[in-house]
Length: 467
Image (cartoon, rainbow, N blue to C red):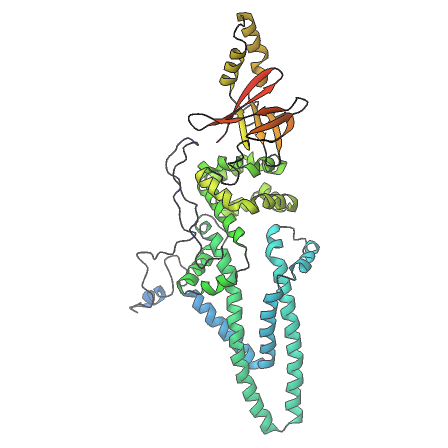
């Protein structure tokens, strides 16, 4: 998704409070607003009635300079042209080649330069993402600049000491003017290199700019909006190095943070069932401060400053596992969070979390033993019901079946049994611990709820799937 204009992000506010099963419609909002404010002046129109009016031509309502993109472009062209005017076309030409070749080789050389990050004690995955490419680009550019400077000195000494003064001054004048022309090309390349982080970062910081985002986020999003207004983002979009999956992951994060009702649904997504059992993820889920920040929709800086979030981001093993799970499933995850339906995993009906239906289980027990005496019934209430109460089955994507007991609300579950599941035609074969495999069928009730009946130790337990 390397768009000219970032596609509308599905994040938005959810109005009203309803049960989780009846999720209200998600109101989509764009990744950043491109609408002109009613009080904003028309471009190019500014009647100079005084000092305040003159400054209003260059300042928007938020205190940021207007037309900063064009100001930065003129600065890049002017500084690069002035430098090349004094250094000459040889240095400028080699610098131009270094810029272009460095951009081409930045990604291929990234694995090599990435080995330097541990030596610099840079373990954060964010550094791992873009810093190796930056190091490779700078290294290639420095090599070409050194070569250009060496050749420039040789040519300059040749004309200065081996030619007459008349020819030397003519050459010097031509040399400077050619250098200025080549320098303008360098300035254009430098401008687009500077704007690429703005183009990428503005997409992710757009919504965060108003809610405690890192300093300068509003300035970046303002520049990003100007890039779109001037159609310069089309050139940047054609050379955007960020994979489409990264943009979609950002959309999903915005969706989760801005819609609290969908957050419990995230834990029920099949690929996350195994991931949620890791200690690092459980620590995040049980962190009271972090939950409060999510509910209050705190800023990005507040989330990044959380010690447990930092510990997770610096754990390359966990972050790699998370990406391996969600990377191939981002479109399906986004559809699941919005609609509650997973086109990829819904056909495998057993995947998910199944809670014991105590009422239905007791009804099956009475049906299987219709002639029980009152004493036997009372005995079962004491010996059977406490054993099966709060049981939960979890079927994961790696064909594991986990039987847990949730003893109290908010408490960590305890593993009662571990096993496997596999397809058996239209049914499923479940093997838990030392119990013989049991073939079960997933059935749908009149209300669409899914349930399964599992035999164990002479009893029949009914489980309902969390939706």
